Length: 320
Length: 231
Image: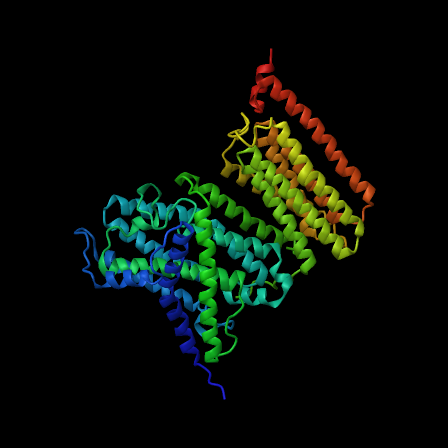
């Protein structure tokens, strides 16, 4: 006799898996990176200890900051935790809330989170936080056309812009995997993810060097639990982007096709394995290429844009 | 939220041919933005290797044993031969120290060059695509990509002010034409394919002599120095 998990529980599990696993994935990447550099590196669980420590600390805010400064990290994490409802994290079939937003909906949520953090940074009147937020906004605006063209490719491939539909299309036949349109869009998305998670081309994601600082600088004035939320938020964003890349574009296999607890548990393990694999690839890339100077970022984004545009072109003639 | 019927997949063989063509176009863009001559030569060799792979894929799919021979010949000449000759011609200094006049011979910044290249590629792509050439061995997309590659190769020769890049642009133009020939007329007699290949070799010799002459006269590979020849 088989037990079926209720749909709302599976939907909740999608959010919980991402929420709980995100710091772990960051820890694994940090470990791999340290090993590549010949260091022993921090424990894999270190990000959890960091978060626990920060949550216990006192929170301070600059005098001139308004309530929004403290609300921003909470709004950002709420936005990040909504996205796992929209994308195939554990199941290959669409969950009820999965259709309340398409890829653009997910994009809007990511943009909203980034926007509130940047606005909060502006409230502080700290030059570094403002520098970080202004850079983050400028560079994400540059990367925006790439994301749009990736969405166009998905639309041309599937006739919809739902992530579940693309994953199903790719699973349907080998011919769908080797289409240049799909491969080019996946490569472009991967480059955007490298850019968005602050791996390459200019930022050291853990760096405290102001010249190359983008994301890290935005949280300079936050402290205690609010800073913990910001850190957790960027770990969530990383895992969400990895999940989209793996479960929608690259390897949409290993997802649960039924509501059996066993299948769902297997899907959780598969997701963690895929995210770790993507993370290891990212760490290797991060360690093999020199960082570019800040203004060279356009060259990197132009290359990603090229991939995405070619993806749309090849699909236009029907053959791609 | 359905937009239109999804485009049906063209099958594994056509998909593979299209992917190889797309990779060749990307390598062309790589040559466009690469600053150093030795990296451009490497990319050219990789592009030539891709065309041999494509010949093997078509040979396997369409059962044309001639193409295996062509793939081997083209690999020997374009993956090994031409890059070797080019490295020699650039004074043998390429591996140690960059030949003067090549790095920084951009007339526009690399990002602008790539964006301009995208426009050129789009133009070539849709022009060739609208010709409506379809054959049993011709994935329409690969044919259109060959058109895009031709224009991007021309773009490479235009935006760079050094003879090495211009020669590499010309040789990759020949790769683009080989790609078009392969996808449209895979069953072309081997002798004709070989003739086209050796046509390219003549160009290598001519370009080689020009590079040599220019290098000896101007002690640089930059064409900007040619203005000094006036009066």
